[in-house]
Image 1 (cartoon, rainbow, N blue to C red):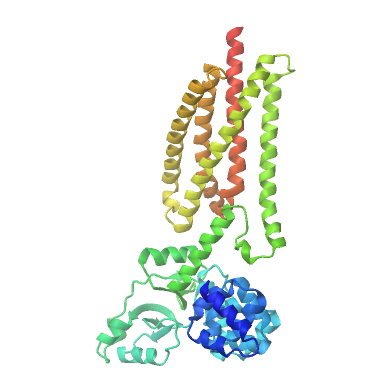
Image 2: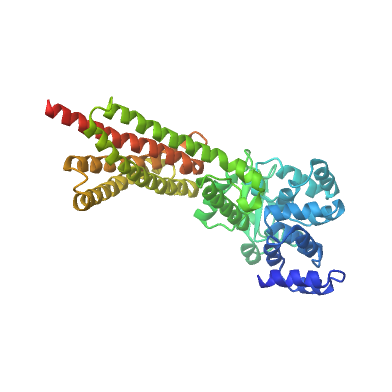
Length: 464
């Protein structure tokens, strides 16, 4: 906050002479400026951005700031300024920045790049943004099979602009990945020794179309600072670095949380109001449909239980029990949301993988049974002690049984719906919001009122 106020004040006070502002920006890390710009209006952020001391620092700010700020900054620059700044960005970030521009301008900027860099950009743009190919950078170090350790070191010395210089990838033929050797091993090796004597051949790698969640899981599992990306033939196409994986994990986590809340996959603060409304409204309409479904279920059972309305005792009992329906729906809905959240997160992180799904579902079902039993007994005791004049013993028994079954069923729904969505190719995070809630609300109401109907049928049979 102090940095934001300082920069804004310097910009306003020196509106004609920005020397003080430029002097301040020289002493501030571009990453900090990138955060501050997101809190400013378009005019202020553009003025501060243009006052940055170098093209490199401007490129860093574009890399580190949020999507909406990056879009505003690019729109405020001239085409020549955009081309200059974007050209200084790493290839993978450059591709992301190009997506903010008109297609004809994208091609002009790519044409101004060096031929090798332009080719790398065109290749990266072929892949989906949420795949390993979309995350990777083509700026890595490689040495041919048969090279000496001295030649591999020379490769490093001639390519210091590579994203990572800690590892050299050994390739054969058409770039097929054969092994990897670290800079530490190369420095310890005699220059004339073959690089094969020091390379690791058991390499953890991913393919270009691997989903970014799987890439993150592999990096986390094997504690890798960088992971190579290969095509279907085994040729290395690029590398994914740890910072890109961290960004992807944060994006996935935010995306899952926002979707579970029934909103967009992009933070709402970065979208216009009408876009946020358009994306949230469908989820709320789904919820409205579920509420209508609950009303239809209750209305159906009311007609079945009360009949023509001549039996006043049944009508009175139904009126007394209706508040219990809302209690059961609320408790069951919470159980389902908690269970589905556990499953969505487990599926996203790889902790719940195909071989473990059955065990995880059974575990959640058992938890639901125990939780349902405890809550049902507690509610039964509360009704027996504090509401004994309102509820008869057989009515309390129906409440206890209905609550127990509804909560156990909600736990099963919360676990199975995300798994089903994953199987059919739907993002499980979407299922954990309105869809699970309305399913449980309708089914919980149905289960409880079915118990009430069975109880009344039993009473009628006993009376006859």
